[in-house]
Length: 342
Image (cartoon, rainbow, N blue to C red):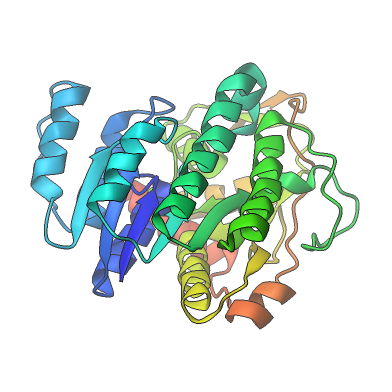
């Protein structure tokens, strides 16, 4: 099978690319190496995911990405340095390749930064996604897996969160863009028979995690004996989901689309195991064998109090079965982090 993956050099995307290549498939990776974080991280992700582990001497972004493209290109993998807001650029890729499915992971992420840059989030997450849907209809591609987010649930008091819940009250621009993507996805399903699965990811962590996310950030700061920003009283909670469980869910969604038609589904991918901020930090302290120095701060605008996934539908529809508990997942993450530092 030949897959187009957007954001295939990111945290989740690079793991998915790696697994698809291992399974003998072909991948076209579309990624714009956004400056949200250091592009060198995405270069390392790309090298690891394509099994091109080699010394890479950095100079400047444009030439580094050009060398990366040449280094990783093969019969079953091509990287395009491409922004999804550029429909004309995307159209060239669609004309040059035939895809069995599109797996759309690219997005501007981050609740807090979306409050500062709401219009940019709308451009990337909504308009960029519509560009892909328009091209799918034009080129006859009717299988589409799309990354949504648990943030669409807002501060719902009903837990665990079910796909049948009302999600009309997002509390950040990021969450609103993800909800908009879900609604527009149904429009394309209805009008153009596009088969779509929207996957609501719940706080994904593990090796290659983005450096701005709490577990990665806290691990770095604790290991360096620096203060960690500790928002609220420690009772906020997340349904942390290990990266390999997420990848298993994405692969099963891809498989479901291969064998079914007339599909529009929204599916939670979580662990259904809720961990408080206090518990997360204490787990890191134990695994790192270091005490955290906490800088207590008020809750930030846009942050939800709790996430908790009902994964009943994921289990019954696609056979999703997460297997990594939080303690073991943190051990695997810390092992990766320390090895990367060494």
